[in-house]
Image (tube, rainbow, N blue to C red; front, side):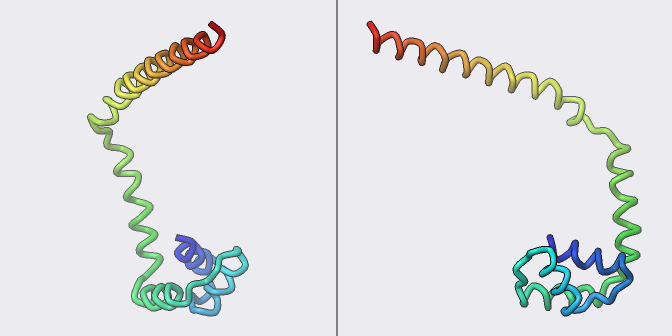
Length: 106
């Protein structure tokens, strides 16, 4: 993922996305550069219009966020059940601990 972020940084800075520039950004960020991944990404990005991809990518999350699902409505009830279950498990384990300590001193 850091390779993609470095590429986006270079694009935003209006710098050419090539092996040397990408390597410099990754090295500056403290990333150990994998030359194979570097070459593959640079080759793949030569075929892509990054501005077009970014324009389409920013429109998609808005559409997804605007459409609530039934699963979203069920989430709070499910979380409450899971919390209750965890509390029950916790009570059992506290009782077991108390019983274990009592046997040590009794």
